[in-house]
Amino acid sequence: MDYAIIAAGEGSRLVQEGVKWPKPLVRLNGTPLIERLIDVFLQNDATTINVIVNEEMKEVQEYLGKLQLPVPLRLLIKSTPSSMHSFFELRAYLENERFCLTTVDTICKKEEFKQYIQSFLKSEDIDGLMAVTDYIDDEKPLYVNTGRNLLIKSFSDKAEPDSRYISGGIYCLKRTALKVLDSAMEKGMSRMRNYQRLLIEEGLVLKAYPFGKIIDVDHAGDIVKAERFLNT
Image (cartoon, rainbow, N blue to C red; front, side, top):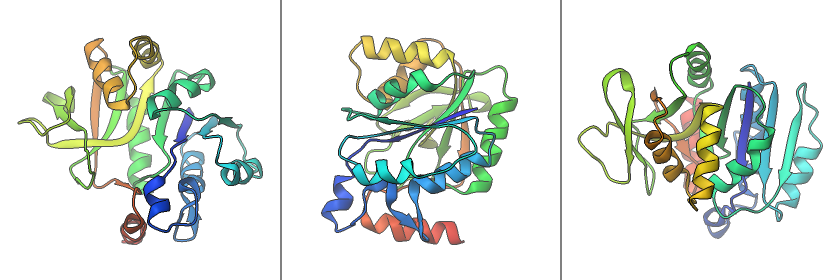
C-alpha cells in the first residue's frame, strides 16, 4: 500500500513558541515526527512512502535525503497554499488501489494504527476509512456525523446531534477518491475538510474508524502532551 505524508506547512506557531526544529523534525521521545511516521508505515505493509515538504525546509530535505529505506521514498519539494493542494501534488505518486494519507504532526498509538490499516485492507464495500476520535483538543475541529455502522453522513464545522467524533487527520482511501480530488481542484477548493465534504456529495462511501486518542502537534505544549500519551 502507498503511504503519503503532508509535511509542507510552516509550523509557524511552534516557531513563535520557541521550538527550534521545523515541524517534521520535532522530537517525541528523541525521535523526529516524520521518522516515527515512516517507521510506523514500514511496519504496516508500505510499498512506497511519499512526502511533500515546502521549499524552505532545507534541513528536512537533507534529513530525508540521507534515509536508507527498504521501500522507495519519494520526496516532493514544493510550497503549497493548503494541505489539499499538497495532497494533489502527491497524487501522481499514488499508484496502488489503496493508500493512506496523513499530516506529519498526527500522533496516535502504533497498535491502534495497525488495527486501523488491517481493517481498511479487509474493507471491500467502502471507498474510504477515516480515522476519528472523540478526544477533542483541536482549535477548529472538523466534526464527523455518523449513522448506522459508523458510515459517515456528513462533515461539519460545528457539533451536531450525530457528531460524536472529530476527524483525526488520517485518511485511508481507494483510487476512486482521487477523481474527487481532481474535481475539488477544478472547483477551486482549498481545504481538506471541503474535499471530505465533496467525497460525500459525490456519493463515495466513507466509514469512520474510532481511535482512542489522536493528538496534533501544533503548539510547544503539545510536544509534552504527545510524549506523555505515547508513554502511557
